[in-house]
Length: 172
Image (cartoon, rainbow, N blue to C red; front, side, top):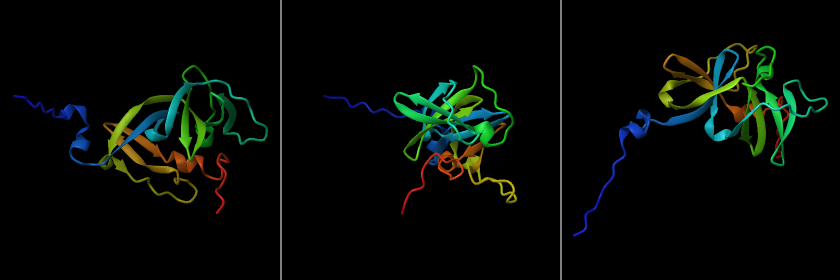
C-alpha cells in the first residue's frame, strides 16, 4: 500500500494580502534626502556602490555620466538633482540602482537603499493632484507601511520621458 503525502502552504510563508486574494506589488525602497521612495522591483537589475562615472560633454546636469557595466555603457542619473532635492554628495553610502527600462539599462543614484516591500493594493493611494506648477506625472501613488509613507515612482515613465533624453522616441 502506498501512502500519499499532501503538503499545504503555511500562511506565514505568504503575505496576508495574497491569502485574501488581494493583488500585491513589490517595490525596492530607497532614500533621497529625508524621503523614502519605491520603484517596481521587476525593473531593478542590480544594486551597486558609487563609482565615479565618465562625464559626457553637454549632458544635462542630472546625468552624471556613464559607466561600463560588463561591456554595456550605462548612463547614470542622479535623482537628487533630477527632483531638485538639493546638492548631491557622494560617499560610501551612495548607491546606484541599475534599472532595465524600455529595453535600456540605466543607473539611478540614490542616497541609500532600504529594503524590498510587498504592498497590497489597499495600501497604495493615488498620487495627490496639485497645480500645474508641481509635476506629479511620474508618481504612481503613495504607499503606507506602518508609520512610513513611500512615494512610488513610475520609473519607466520617468526614464523614457523626453526631458530625460535617455531613450529615443519610437518612430510610428
